[in-house]
Image 1 (cartoon, helix red, strand yellow):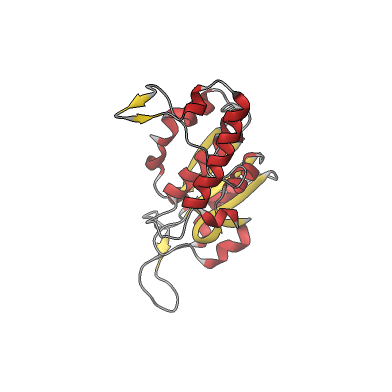
Image 2 (cartoon, rainbow, N blue to C red; image 1 turned 90 degrees about the horizontal axis):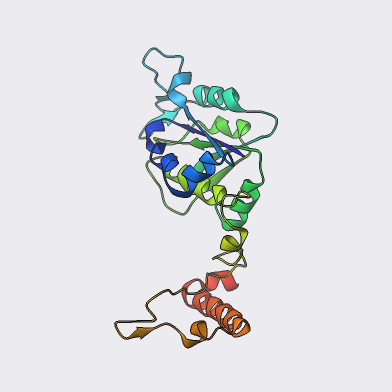
Length: 220
């Protein structure tokens, strides 16, 4: 798949694309990233992309024209366009799975006081990563890109995400590794038993217990 990110700050993505699973996915040719600088589509001499809001108010608003021109520079019939916005639908694992099946995602990073509301005529939706406000959509675009990339076929083993948090609407079960006892804290005996069915049952029970304690809303 291909992910195009439209941003005012392209350098923010340099380290993100050069480390860990994202880097390996790119090297394997499983995911292609494209970082588009919105400023290059400004028609003003100083590459200005924002202006004061009509009706007054604090801050500056990104103009719609350079953003739409940036979208059109990469958009195809297979593209889905989403604006990173605190007023969007909350990003969840189910959305990540859905996005991972797309051929081409275009993610727009807003900034300042947001983008001219007329951008809604040129996008397929808005996505929020939580009920808080960031200085820009860049970090949100990284979160979405990371969650989606790891679900693309071949990036990681399918078993690695089939039982993890939110896949079955439960949090992940506790995991342990060597040593078996550390500072008087022991690994649960069932995990050392070698009895696979008992381990499976224990893990399901622990998922439910952990979800009830930490995220009871998921059980509703």
